[in-house]
Length: 422
Figure 1 (cartoon, rainbow, N blue to C red):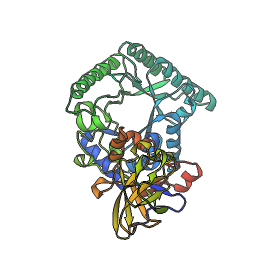
Figure 2 (tube, rainbow, N blue to C red):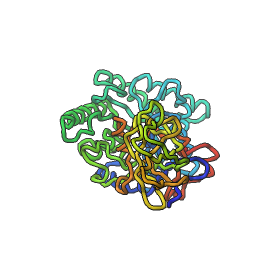
Figure 3 (cartoon, one colour):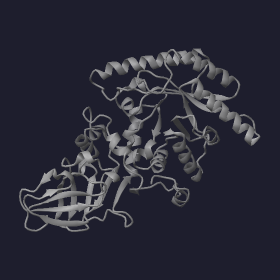
Figure 4 (tube, rainbow, N blue to C red):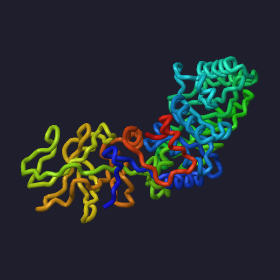
């Protein structure tokens, strides 16, 4: 039997950084010469922001992105701890709320996304404040103009872009900003063969038009970037100077119905495991967990696992997926029975006269389907959601264990500064 759990918590997520490197290399092949920006937001999709970023760095990636300034500051701090040059490692953050620390963002040499003139003014003000505070020459803020090609989320519209571009050109001429990039997001790129394909093609055309408007305003962004994982995989016209894969780095297809991870050559990088803490025999007619949604038809062995929805296991997978128990006699496929509780779940160990499992046996909650393990996609289907949501809800209190970690990671520094994954 394999001992999967560290001693200090009853569950862990094992992250194979070798798989991360493989996926990055594979996505670089799909990018066909465009630069790669690794999206490590939401704590690296639950797998550990800093560790994933360092693994991508080992594969030559020098652009990284997270959603918010505080995340970006934490990643920069960890890069600094490894003595990575901030002039070489570019960290983009695309959600800059008015109350965020734009000054610290500028001090940390972050790239910030601006969708409005108001956000642009925040970046300009931060650059001025840093120059005054540090009594040094004005260093321009690094900005990426964000445009809306059809997502109706962040980004300047066709009507708003001329004013934003004109103000950015004025600020760049004054040495207050450097327009590093132009970006947008494709909302239907994960439908590569259906009606979404025509929609995405129209959005790519619109992005080209926006780029021409920005160039006409006298701005020459270093990188224009539009495609996330789906755009990287299925829409070569969306590659431009750089692509921004997220979910693919972690080994998952953005649309398993279109192509599975295996078909795309991607390897799932995470495995969520726990242990059996109790085993009991219940009689026919005995109901299990809150609401009694599962009832034994005959004498049944059930196992108790010390994890629940507070540990990222969706309550909606109750009675819908199985886990793999690694017993002395082999792997037992055990359905989750009854409702998932806040910090415990029950599993069906069968009706044999003797239980096949023992307290302390390792249990795989999700892992690699190629190894016969329940997958994150299985959880997502059972929950009627997407694997992005399943992964991003994995809480940071779950221990992460890293296989094949980069030598450059200074774990003592990370622990001291509360950095890294969890």
